[in-house]
Length: 324
Image (cartoon, rainbow, N blue to C red; front, side, top):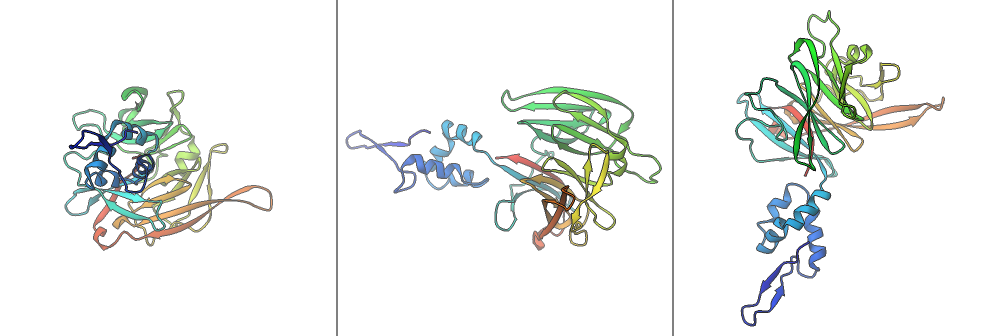
């Protein structure tokens, strides 16, 4: 990284200005590099030397390689319909929220929402191997892929559908994006479903067992797809691809009495984070156990995080993992 220097006006000698007194600048820059988001930008106001260090090209380049995943939760007010963005700090001893600056203009989830003038509405985005895969609905399902290294978007595979897809649920796992339109009243027609393979850039029809049993909010954790029910007894299920079935997960059921729908979920670091009304978040820890038959069983433990009275009128509308 760049070394910060100042000019001595008396003898024109260059004197190094310490970022943190008592520490070499290289160590001090590493300390600044590990400041969590969004405190790096705030730290620029501490001093001119910190501002120069944090905005230097070398610091920004190092920041790209040291970026960490964060959970960004987007919400809307029940009455005003204003949108808000929150940072969910999942690394702290007790999960907490940071309210980010207000969202102005058209709401953009991670800067990925298509403009209203585009014919195909935007529905979902997932990260896969350093890329961002977006899925659009409408008269056809199509994928668009963003490559961060080249800073470019390209069109992915497309599949034509007989009837327009107005809305759907999507989840990415192990290089595949699973898309289903879900059950609808009067529940007489089995939902349609598709699977987009990001590696082969192809679409295929989803297995009937997966789309028939998908009756809640899906989330990927540890290479498995889990389904959080929005109704019923809160029994969480995991999808078994070989048998095309949903299997019950042992342990505690989802705390529907405390975290109410609509639900938005995301998986990160072996846990699932499910946000509901009032931005209450249920944190589910997935534990693998070997039973008496030497078979691996999954077990869930839940912890509910209260967001505070000030968030009572907010509803979760999107949850996304972004790197900062």
